[in-house]
Length: 473
Image (cartoon, rainbow, N blue to C red; front, side, top):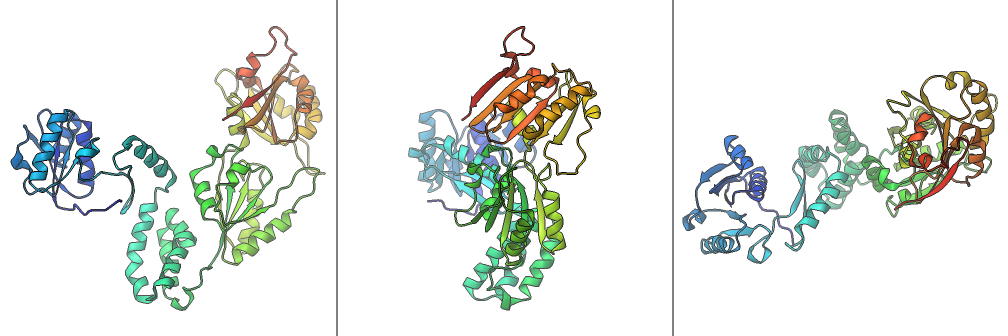
């Protein structure tokens, strides 16, 4: 059981010389306690804390009288016999004591803490596995927004007004849910506290409407990355866990989709070239309908929504419809898949520029300027180029790009079934034919030589190629 105690302005004692004593002294200081440290040979960080006025440091051995009048004592010494003696003194003085890494000697345990301003999250193992508690703390710490403390302070600022205006407990809880999970909370987390306060005041001034959970909806257009769920941004993960509706493309990995709230409505709106799918106008309509009904919508797109993802078009449509829309970038396929294949997109000795282009153009659109792309020490990255790879290869070679230029086709990049095919540019159409139906990315340029797969090709055979399956965990 975790219990939060108020140590503000209360006397606390830390006994020990090293890092553990400094860590506990710092924790008590952050809790507002008046900390005294007693140590024979205090470490540098303890001396620095004393010089900064954070703690009172006494260079000497402890005595039983040191325990009298303390609210809490922390024993952070290495010697077992000394630890037992100090603990016995604390208990004789009726002082709660914690012996670091010795649960059998401790009256209480100190949890691993994640702090966001006044908000604290404690993780405790009952002293059984403090290292594991610290690991869990790091995972939670990474997943919580940095401005969560600001949101806590924002709520404290309006708490009395909400209590006075909305006396009914259930209605008040619904209001706070709406604040934390809706537009007001998002604005605070984004740093727009003025805008959030304006909307909060308007909400408080309409007490008759607070029982309605809906309120104004919003849409987040979110990049899901190239596939590996560990490449998802923390913000994208947080928004998925708060979404009421998730509209997702066919390129979104199922493992990413599994991070969404269990009760969220999940709507597949994927489109594949040459296959039936949901039209773009229908996707716009679904987003507008859901947001207009007060729902939190995540429009989930593979890679980055603003790199050949039509995120800009969708945002413009939503803005014209009066829908609050936010863009959340993701790791685009060029970055994720190239890294997964061991290909640096730029390198001092091989490429000083990167050009991203799409091989999927609409009828009537101008084709790529092959002459411009063939010049210079650049890397070409082609999205959705498998169906037009033969034409692209011919044009690049005709424009002057040597046929022996290294090239790679990465299929299902960053995923467990990733396939990598490397060879010269002249063999690129044949490499593309080896792929299946998964999403593919083409990389052309001297940087492909740096991929381990390129070095594994048949020696002294410039036109040889290699295909490998990368089993990933």
